[in-house]
Length: 291
Image 1 (cartoon, rainbow, N blue to C red):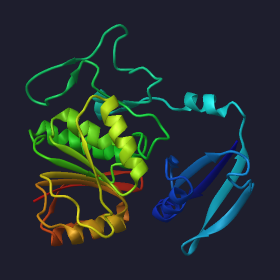
Image 2 (image 1 turned 180 degrees about the vertical axis):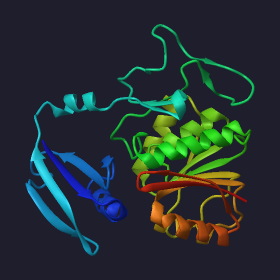
Image 3 (image 1 turned 135 degrees about the vertical axis):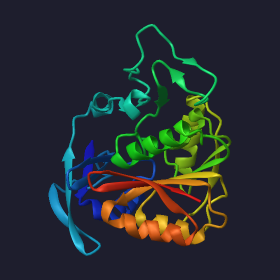
């Protein structure tokens, strides 16, 4: 089996990811570090080129491309590298199905409580099961982490109610979290059919009700909702802002570099939304905007 990886700067990520999706629309592995993002896909010999280590153009700049042979038993061994992601001070756990929830005492199942934070699971936190490879989003990337934190803060303020649309839902991590926190109905929006299928499967596996809707956000307006969450690139966020009809009460967005935040803030200000809260993590930023 061959692993084909492209490593680039964060500001090149949207261009590189768009190209990788063309090769593997069902899912791309993503890793990030200080000043870099890496996307990888896997395939058998003859399916992907064995290039060794080279550089290639991405826009006006170069990116590092590496392809390497990996052991034949990688299909089983790769699971060892996916650990549960614990977020929100232990309040949310995102894990693959073959890993146990590290927040849950062995032999004890989570119970649901009524009252504020409807759907909250104690004492082990909100348990979200997402198997890597089905679509984008396993909770490991800083942009997803910050969106989780901002959704939790809205829920803590008693704002987890009414319809919510997850724009660019991918694997539906954020949509599933929103449903567990109390938003209803929740709709996962994406242009990729494979992502919508994976989102529906993941919602069912997590025991939440979620609709799906196919929308090309580069050409169409997003569906109307009281709350929106959008983990997208900055250029696409600006396009969403330009097509907003009735602005939502709240919009949680990320996927933008820190230096791009001001431009995104301005675009949504033109649509009637102002910044309520802003988070940063490394090179990335996330915003909660309010009507």
